Length: 360
Ligand SMILES: NC(=O)c1ccc[n+]([C@@H]2O[C@H](COP(=O)([O-])OP(=O)(O)OC[C@H]3O[C@@H](n4cnc5c(N)ncnc54)[C@H](OP(=O)(O)O)[C@@H]3O)[C@@H](O)[C@H]2O)c1
Image 1 (cartoon, rainbow, N blue to C red):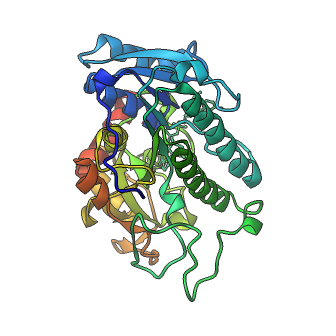
Image 2 (image 1 turned 30 degrees about the horizontal axis):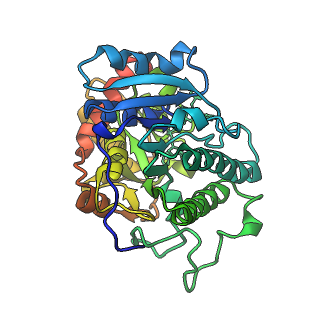
């Protein structure tokens, strides 16, 4: 990483483009940018699908200070973003085919690169973009580890850890979707930092969210693979369908904090080419085993008769859960000035948004 002061941007520097703007995270990025007075170019595949874009359009009539305009683009088409990025001071790349639509693991891996390559080519051609933020994932961080290990931004999924088998290898990509996804994110990160360093005209940073929960803006944000959808199932009295037996350690971050962190990244003088920020719980209060999530949801929504999750026996979890992944968003707080929601605020807002959308 170089020593020079990072470039920063503000609403006076021009529009900010957001890919995947209609998505769960993308929508909160747009909301936060507009709240700070930015003009936003929201990139969506089809601006004529009301179920995907109406909530974005409604932001223009709200008390948010900025403005959003919809632009049609596809991550699979080279050059699709060329004209949209021209004149923008920053690009936030939150769009992705996340890989739960019957893609093979190899397709998940390949598509991540193809998408990022297309976007970064358009950034280079723009002549105006100074800051590029990639929504990577904590998956690019989490390598095999002893229980209770605390991950930081220095960790990469393909780190070799003494005494542990190496799973994140080329041979594993065609065999396992999660490994394909993690390696694609990690390698895409390294690729964009290198391209930005070679280009010299812009800086590239990444955000690494863990379990993202928080309010949904529309029913389309209830994607069947998502963490928020798994909370919905628990609130409907069903098991947590994320893992075998529903057992897992939820390391939660609020989607509104994820949105805010992307904007702070383009504004921070400390975030520079190669900077990466884990977005996870701020402290242990946001790291909860499934049975603890059940308890919190039951306390926050007393009208719900049965909250599901993992199997309980005599008021205790029937089986032990592996104590991982532990990680805290300390760097994002220190370098970006991120303020985070408390876990109860996030759970309440998630549940209330489901109630409002009529999905419970
Ligand atoms: N949610 C999490 O817990 C989590 C955790 C870690 C990392 N992430 C990362 O965060 C990013 C956003 O995730 P999300 O949860 O917001 O997912 P999401 O709600 O599915 O949003 C993804 C967006 O990408 C757009 N997209 C998909 N294929 C496209 C294509 N071919 N061309 C253009 N746009 C396309 C979709 O927009 P349209 O359908 O409107 O075109 C969609 O709105 C992803 O990179 C994901 O890997 C998410």
